[in-house]
Amino acid sequence: MGQRLLNVRVRPARITILINRNAADPDLFLAFEFFSKHWGGRFYQIIPVEKSTCDDLTSYRLACTRPDFVYGIGLDDQYWLTATHKACQRRGYGPLQPELVHNIREHHPEEHCPVDLPLVHLFRTRERRGRHKRALRLVTPDSLCPFSTYCVALFGVHHQNLHKEFFDQETKFSAMTPTALIELATEFVREWQQSWLDMTGHGLHGGLIGWGELEPTVVLVHHKVDDLSLF
Image (cartoon, rainbow, N blue to C red; front, top):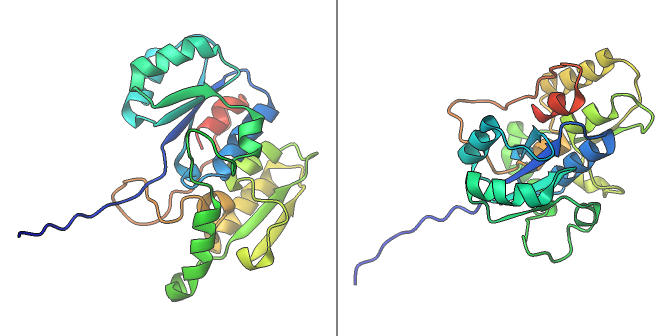
C-alpha cells in the first residue's frame, strides 16, 4: 500500500480587535493585556473604528487578514456582528470583556492558546540555541507614568509574580519623558533582548521574506488610539 507524508503546522487563532477611536487608556490597556496572554499575541491586530460604521478601508483590512475571531471595544456590537461577517466570515465576534481577559486560562468556546505554552517551551529549549539565545526582559510601567500605555504596547503585559526561572531581567519604568521610553526601546534592539510581547510570538513568523525581527516604531499623531493601533 502506498504511503504519503503529511506535514501539519499548528498555529494559534488569528485575532483582531476593533476599538472605538474615542476609547480611553483602560480600554487600550485591556487590548494589550489580552494580546499578552495569548500565543500569537504579537501578531494580533488592532483596528480603530467608529462605533457603528464600517468604512471601506476597515472592510478591506478584515478581508485581507481574515481573522478567526474579532472582538470589539466600545462598539455597537449588533452592528459589527453583521459587518464583520460580511467582511471576513470570521468564526466569532463579541465584545472584549475584562472577565475574558482576566480568566483566560478557564475553558471558553474560542479555546485560545495561552502564552504559558510558548513560555515553557522557550525556556526548555533555549540552551540549544547557543549564541542565538535572547534574554527575556520584563518591563513593568508605573501606573502614574504618562507613557504607561505606550510601554505596554511596546513590551506587553507580563504575568504577575512570574517565577524567576522564566525570565532574565526585570525593569520598572516610571520615567516621565518620551526620550526615556525611546531609550528603553533602543536598549532592547541594541542588546538583542526579547520583550514579553515578543515572546508571545515564539515559534511563529509573519510570513515575511527576509531576515530579522520587526521592531515597532512610535508614530505620534496626537491621537493615542490611532498611534497605538499601528503597533
